[in-house]
Length: 254
Ligand code: NDP
Image (cartoon, helix red, strand yellow):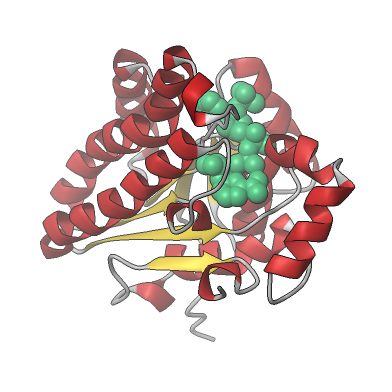
């Protein structure tokens, strides 16, 4: 049967796939046949995730590099291209969050957030896209956030970085579509991971969240897999420049 959603023989590089949403996407996409290249800040972190995936019978390799280090990005991508014959899908997922009131936000935290969440999407995508252009094929998926649509206390630089991810997605789509490259984004709502642990531990936050979200609950990171499979597969070949909200309706509600 011709399965529109099959990822057989697809090599998918996921940044920040050692844990959290990136790891669950790695496992979810592997279930559809993809070979996963697991990125993280260190070889140890990446390899730990690879070992779990392999134990579960999936196909994966470690691809560690700091997404803020342009030389490391270049070296790693060139090695993958040479040894594995190319990256079919890139998922820019690595991200960080720091929380402070706006007037007290340290400049260093602003710089770190912009480097990982925003500049790295540009740098990793540019390096990978040069090869995709040569092959006239590829897909790039940027993990944004529904926070790009809403102002909220203590996370203004994070929200700004995710707003930039939205516009990187649209701009890259316009520049790369002519080479048969699709660039889309996924904008998650609130999902329980290490990044949101402090919020999940705060009953007042969960009470606010359930009231504010039409679905009236936290998201389960497994619920992001469908969007990633769709945007990685042939099923989305004419979907380009789109930001797919997976947020229980939060961004649609006042
Ligand atoms: P986690 O904190 O659980 O995981 C972050 C991942 O990013 C880790 O794999 C980490 O690797 C990696 N990472 C961080 N910095 C770098 C770097 N410089 N180079 C390479 N890898 C790096 O985050 P989540 O899983 O919660 O978030 C994943 C993405 O989803 C982020 O972009 C986030 O903004 C977005 N998002 C998350 C939401 C949520 O509710 N959780 C909501 C909306 C968006 P290592 O293990 O080596 O540190």
